[in-house]
Image 1 (cartoon, rainbow, N blue to C red):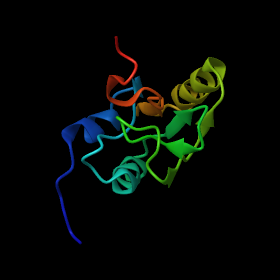
Image 2 (image 1 turned 60 degrees about the horizontal axis):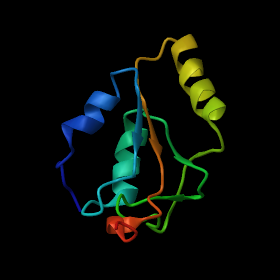
Image 3 (image 1 turned 45 degrees about the vertical axis):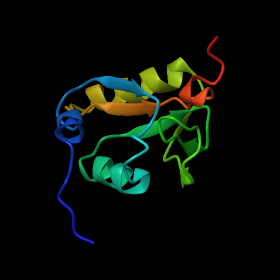
Image 4 (image 1 turned 180 degrees about the horizontal axis):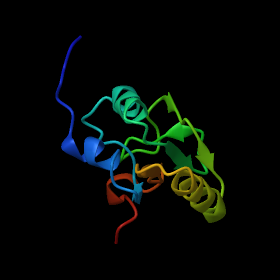
Length: 106
């Protein structure tokens, strides 16, 4: 399959030094392919205290997380190492949504 439908957000993340905290990859997208694109553009990705990369509305996608961040210091250290190396890219930290679609909303 050949598709060049790549969000400009992913490309921008490769050239903007920022930490993006997200609920994961949009559930309508292919999580594995999205992570591959981010890897191709040298954008570090990982999850917050989860071995599985979340699919935005669900904490589960079936895709193993490239990195697991156990605390804020892990995230900060990873980001700062990139800056010390002179890298211009950002990074993505996915936090699993354990209340998909607001099931616990009153």
